[in-house]
Length: 84
Image (cartoon, rainbow, N blue to C red; front, top):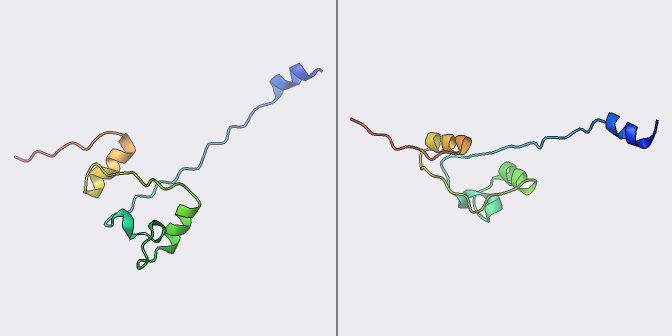
């Protein structure tokens, strides 16, 4: 069997990346040690940030956590609630 026929028999394995999105509530970006805060200690979040990617220019479309999380997961803007 020649190399051409062997190449058709080899299956390529495509590894999917591991993706972990942490969305912490109730504090702003500057409340992390990895963001330069000298007072607040966040060693576990700092370790995760050191081994991953930090989105320094991200923003939230809503100040309330549930609509903001739904927006992140769906890609849609949160819709205003109309009482009445």
